[in-house]
Amino acid sequence: MQRQTKKKRRPLVFASVACLLIIVAVGLLVFSQNNFSTLGQTTADAKGNQPNIETEEIPSSIEQVKVFKETYKTSTTTYEIEYPETTDESFNETIQHFINTEKEQFLALAKDNEDVSKDDTNKFTINVTPFEYKQRFYSFTFKANTALAAKKSTEHVATFIFDNESAQLVSFEDILNNNLRYLETFNQFAFDQLSADTSLQDSLLNEKSLKKAVTYDWEHYPEVAIEDNYLIVYFQPGEVTAESQGVVTIKGDMNYLHSILAEPFQSELTEGAKTLPLVVDNRKRVALTFDDGPHKSVTEEILNILDEFDAKATFFMLGKNVQAYPEIAKEVHNRGHVIGNHTWTHPVLTKLPISEVQKEYTQTEEMIFNTIGEHTTIFRPPYGATNDDIKALIPTRSVNWSLDTLDWKHRNAQTLLSIVKSSIHNNAVILMHDIHQPTADGLRAVLQYLQSEGYEFTTVDEVLSYADFHM
Ligand code: NI
Image (cartoon, rainbow, N blue to C red; front, side, top):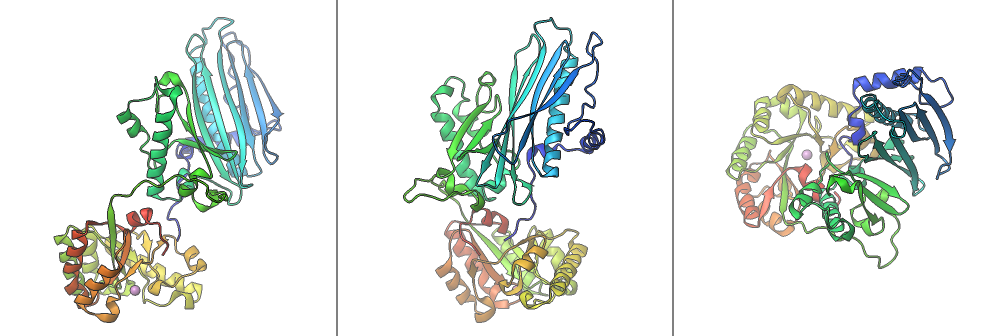
């Protein structure tokens, strides 16, 4: 199975074109041995003095990472910024971008606050501590403190986790294996830890607000770092407590969190070790999938039955059938169902040269796009036959099934129901075909049965994000 898109860490989201230009400009202006130029910071202070800027290497807690400290001083403003340097240039650029943004924000604030007395100046510090986990992941926790003269100081935290093996930034989604049930379990864990922390008693949000604050999703999540054998979760001031409490942290032993971690982040469990129980999943879901269509009459019948149950399904279509029945493919799309790519001619892909696999996929993709105006986001290899080379070639997620109704074999409406009854399980991905009349004939009874058992008809994506079996 393969991830469709790799979400980047939040700080990267802010990398606008303008910021890139700054990086390029900074890159062109490297005049000392360090990577951080003094671009934009050479503005004189109120008395016309130029700032004094120095950079020195300071001790690092891990061998493979250097840490530098840049200090800046004028009569009104100082900063001390620590930053790491790894052997990976693109990671270093990400860090430079982050540091430059922080620096510029502070200097802009300081510029507006230059009318200060001698003993009360504008100060900014960023401290960083690198941690190494499993000799593979580097975590960097940046703690920033802004103290503008005559004003209360504020702090914030930013974290980056770098995978030294893939040379990629690690997202929260990566750590939790892109699994929604793991995320819900994490949310519950965060809520429980914060609620149990007696030192926060007076400043913690009320129960309802706290619950809301820690209901994270993949777009919105806290800063995390792996420090020694702990997952440290950082909450910004005001996020889960009164602002005056400052940055708040909770931590979970990586062994204890084992049950919600993607495999690369799991550490070896000692026997009988206690691990975090997954939250109870109260909902029952199935994903209905129909392959090999569209068909000139059966597909339409199936669409009508699905509508009776307000059920959405996924149709894995063959390019040649989309070409033959474009109006039916459009109808499937217009009625809110998902269309997946199922190749052009339904070959056993593992027996084809890779160039043929590419052709099967791309031709179908173009046909579907030209017909419904959208690209597919999901792929099913015919007969479920795939391998690593094929998975690497197909840009979208490859999905097989967990319940085979064998409708192509028995072609019998009653048998369809009895197979579903005997094999149904939560988060099932059910395989059927919208090219056989008996499947349409038996579908209503199947949907009635599933509905009476409390199942919701949902998308393959949603089912997979909760499924704890492998297909
Ligand atoms: Ni098929």
